[in-house]
Length: 109
Image 1: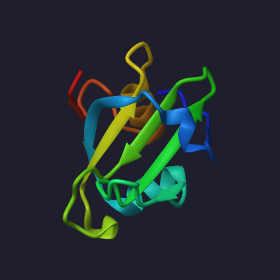
Image 2 (image 1 turned 90 degrees about the horizontal axis):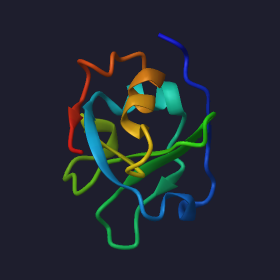
Image 3 (image 1 turned 90 degrees about the vertical axis):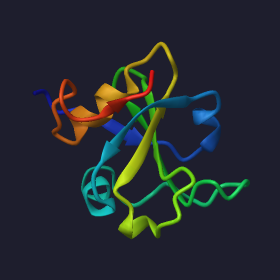
């Protein structure tokens, strides 16, 4: 599996218009090991405590976030993956984490 190259986005506006593509079952520490510390803490509507927004080498934007979780981010195991419908955000996140896209996530698209 090819390693996925990405850069964090420092502007939440890049994720405007993304929507849920799937979810992944992994720990906060596993996400941090691949994507670093969260790019954003909290959302205006208090539905998200932490969020990563990444742009992959082909321009795909992918978000990872803890939507409506009652848990502290460090205890969460259920992460939502968001992207634009014409992109492969879920697949790119899974590949970056070393997870086979055919077996590693719940697809919501």
